[in-house]
Length: 80
Image (cartoon, rainbow, N blue to C red):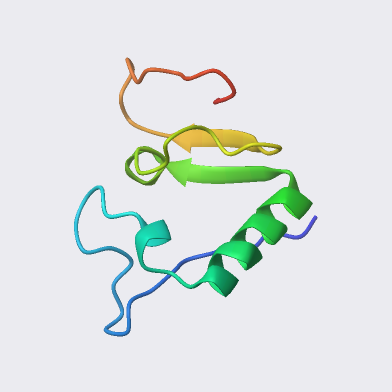
């Protein structure tokens, strides 16, 4: 099994400006295409709840696993 981590970083080394700041607002078209390709190829994406909250819905054609410490985190359809 191959495992990889994908992270979009700002030029000054941050992964986000603040909570709710989605990298999809400031990454390039090529970055987005690579993210889609790699995660669809893997068939699964594992996200923290804050990152998942920046997406409008679960990622299509991938198993979506969301990590949270909340025991009452609302599970969307298609999310584990």
